Length: 304
Image (cartoon, rainbow, N blue to C red; front, side, top):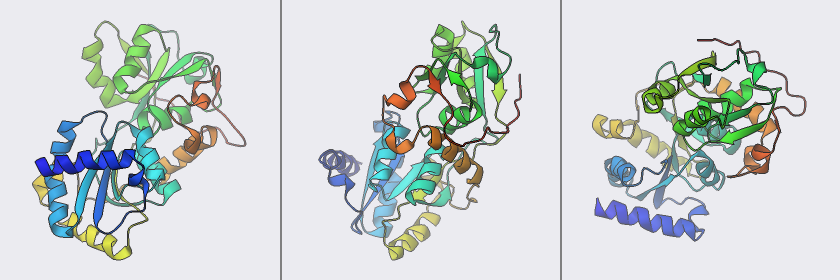
């Protein structure tokens, strides 16, 4: 455990010096994931899986968690990660734009949906009524909090996009009046309701498409022979170790076709390659959710 932590801290130092952005060699594997500041708990969760890979692959394995999807995208763009334990939105970008290959599914919530939420007593009855209002969204890379809602609001001009680091911050923005509506998943909303008991929320819109689970991605810079060895080793991960990192070695890879199409549409409005924290495209007031020759999506709403 101490060795894994030392390796992790050493890698963060090297990455800070720019060394972590070099091409991935065959003497080390770098695992990337979104940590949301989990720190020590995340390191502990991956410890046995990392040691398993080290033993079977006979290479040094290092974990590099990024705080959020936006920071993770920077590392993917730099080809700094050998393997990525990626949530669906980040996975769609990495597959479509950066040639990462999905190899195994991750555990996920079945029937996950993206919803747009307002206060219970708000006057809004459809998405068009949100025109000219401030709207709370999650981080770039979030399927339910960023890609799906921007896609479904295509064609509107909003007062502003209130950028939130977490789903809890989205509902807090609505409760405080900072935003008139916001996006997250149904499961996140239900989990957060008791924490913000002073405000009642209403689902204004539910996207009809199921959000696929995340996947383990393989970097295009890894030698083909090493790729095949990795596939075999990960496929045989002991069940208890696999469960600790949310890996489903015997599962079927999810279909990302629709999710990638949504990501590409949103990317035509806000190019991911140009966005960083505080990017002017997202923080402009008002913000126009349309560009070029993109056509309006045909999703139908579902109200609660």
